[in-house]
Image (cartoon, each protein chain N blue to C red):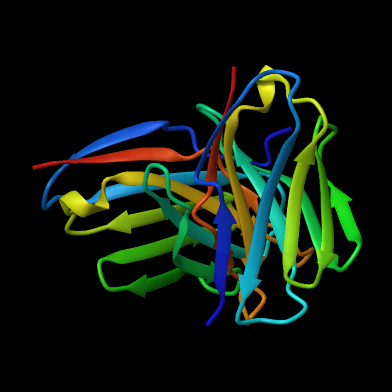
Length: 112
Length: 111
């Protein structure tokens, strides 16, 4: 079965600072990978998804970017954080049957 | 444009009674429907799903109902237990590699 590693669990960053969140997946090859965000009082919003190395699709215009340097590694980045980037960030991958999403444990980002 | 709506942000239910969570959608292309459960500071976990060719799927205390004509999905939990207290998200897919989630309903089970 697949395992998703996501870190750090909690992060407090000042406005204008850079961001790098990393996600790695074990137990599967060539997975579809996703970054979701849950902002306070809102649902889960898809930010980026990737179907392969170097292939990134952005769902919403934003201050963030994503990269996939290796098959099972997905990175969420920002050059300069905004207050509105605060939220709970979740990495996810599709299951073997390609129907369910499996989520990592998430990163709570607070931009102050 | 919110394609998937959970109109009740919160719900409180007495332990042992039935919890009913609802979800409405607008996109008739959705053909697979899921419910996820989320505890604070954790990632969501899959709970139960149903495909568009069915109108009911049952797994233990959890039953999902799909009314395609009304574009309405519901989750029934019976009997409700304290450990069911969490945020519940409905999610939908039409085979385009992405899930669209609702805004979530916070369920509180009262002992």
